[in-house]
Image (cartoon, rainbow, N blue to C red):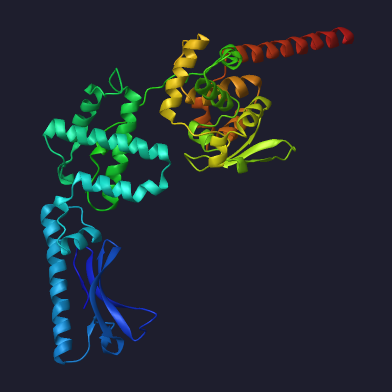
Length: 422
């Protein structure tokens, strides 16, 4: 019972045997469209002796067999109707789409919140905590946009078009979040749009969307100068006498990050078991990055080691089995603002600035090759490291002076040789 049209559409009834009941087969309808296929369980089974594999139907003429074959004919007819219905709509037909329509799930009724819910359900276990939070913020903006632009709490996926995307872009550029004085900057906006595009791409994979309206939208990130602390600024933070305990702790873990390159989440989750002897017999950090799960192998510099020893016996650390007590990123960045004022630093001090400082001031400016810095930061490519780590002008000047001296000495040696020959 196999049927195929000129549109590479086929229906075939097959049986699948379970290990427990090897002589009984569950009946499935296999739908094939353009060599892609999906199977539908028909919730019926049959003795394999009574099944015709070639024709895909039951053998015999008793009433039960006739009733089953009649049902299979009905299923085939309904699946064909679903295929033709999608053809008339001009849909991009897939086996999953036919399956959904067969079970009464109208693709036109799929909604944005259902897709958001499914994305949260299926992807949350794969993401780091920070990434999950970022998607949550994007979701809140999407729902706020629906409320303001359409006065709705949900929206049909089939109605999302380029105008919808363009209007959402405008909404993000003009909205003033409660926790921001200024509107969202361009790069933060692009990150929201990037996440939204990924969510809609999931809708395409699920056959809930025919095409992604982001196909006509260009993500345009602006190149930004990555901030970092100079040696003088870092030294002023290290040497500052701070009498407030909470600020002293924040200063310490910030400086620790400056000498290890670890992000906030990697610092607060750093476990004692991750501190091991390295190949050189000194203490190293061996762990995976929380964000990307990429391996980190970092030799611990003396100043970072001193900070580890300072908090090793802290009850808050001991209770967690971590090197440092737990504190939220929001509080860390809030307290860093106070530290910046105390130290007379005008730059916007955030915890991530420590990672940039490690890449630039601590490593690259002291002659550590960028390939090594890339490994220390846990980057998968040097291109990513180049964004974070800038070579200081002082380092450029130092290297060029070395080159000038080398060229001068070469010229000098050449002249000496010429004189000796003459």
